[in-house]
Image (cartoon, rainbow, N blue to C red; front, side, top):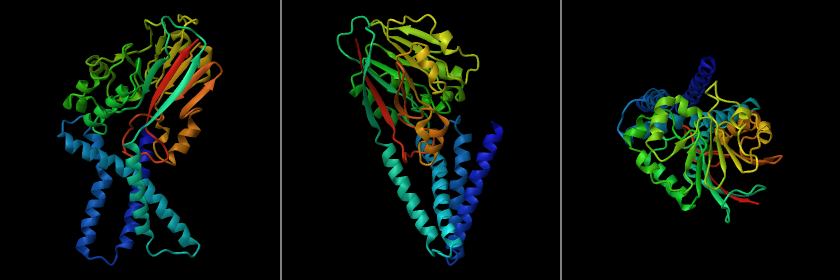
Length: 363
């Protein structure tokens, strides 16, 4: 894993050196003072990512922390698209089609894409899935409405104001049950306490309860600290546990695969009642073929974000057998959410943020 991050950082820095060189060539006619100022601003932006990461456990003023986080992580996507556009113009140059304003066009196209991506991120979609399960729970005359979300990533990126909006969206659906598929927390619980985000989470309303499983980011944030924070909210955290609701629905909450000693799905489900509906929460969507064999009717997962932006989405589509959306595996229904919020860069390009509503009829 350390080698992986070293490679990524090396690629990131190489990309910024490439942009800087092309920018210096485009700005050669500008006064020396202007070039120095732009160079300082450029490298402040490029290196701000490291600053925002190192300061994740530091108590900072909310506005400063949020702004530095968005600039630092946003620069990752700025770098990606600037490099892609500049490479296109370099390829044109190789075939004797030089463009004098290639850098400026690349800069304009990148900013346009980022503006669209930010707007798209700020407008999550609501996906409604009508589902029939051939099992009958106790006392269920009406369809069961389950609102499911994942990957909210509360912290310096998704702040209390964003959380308030998300809570409103969830409550607006009038859920019977709320499920959270992991990564409620981003990289640290420090900003959650600083902004008292437990106050907003306390506004979530569902008569059958609110259940959650850990994601890898609860472990990145420190699983003990994450568990302690969640205990201060109405959310019940399930770590390799099975809960049976008053209506007979069984919720299987699997610990994240970050815990190498977590139970296998077979072990976790060995005592479930196969005659009653079974909902599985498992943050990372791996080994999905095991789900039907375990007697699961509905699995809800997240983690992938579907890459958040193109072309990273192509990579996640290749890595995961189901990287996003709904699919039926035999008698099991599986939904992999792209996430209500996201990690890092505040952009959705080629993907969408989403809230998922399951209207489940049992008969």
